[in-house]
Length: 255
Image (cartoon, rainbow, N blue to C red; front, side):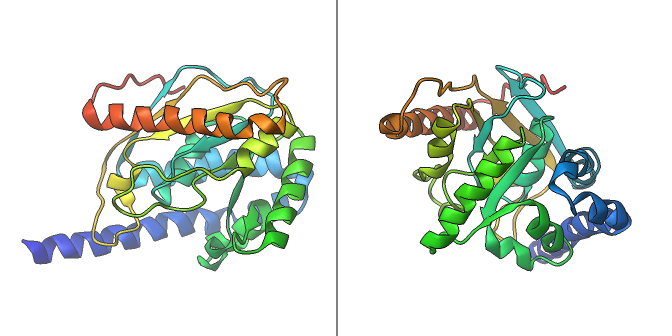
């Protein structure tokens, strides 16, 4: 039995990367054009959200269930944050927001064949070990916010250790949100680690629950309030993670 489970996990992993790559290959000319100018990014985002992410989510047998306490307003900028445990966090975040946003993520993802090519062109990459890189990220994020886009940061700064439910949050997302006086949109992803974690022999089809919490306003706040804001957001997500893992009742209000 263990042998057959191992074969399933290997094929499941391969199938995931096939689903990641094939839509990109098919849409390559359009994606190449739309990623060549920052002003065309909303159209690139539409294709990534409505085609690429859906192909992966439903092709893997995932069933997204998104509960929303508040909805994003069209044309408004936000700081989107969520707990981070899986590569599928990218697809679920795309599913959760119709408003175009730009990911801030680790530079190592550039190494993924095909995906990495466009990741490098449209996302904001960060080398967390380099102060110069972190400063450059801040400048690029400012430019994107000035264009009316939103920003998505996974504030743990990486995937936590296996036995850690939610790691401590870094400052970057909250510093930017205060500087630009934009609302923080906390989201809790319940099942992504179970569906497709970074542990190779794990995962499988099933529901993919998320909750979009009420937004945390930053209007009128200064940088001296960055820490309590960060702690508030983390406590909210941690509480919801505990609720998710203690109860299976989640209302599907995905639009």
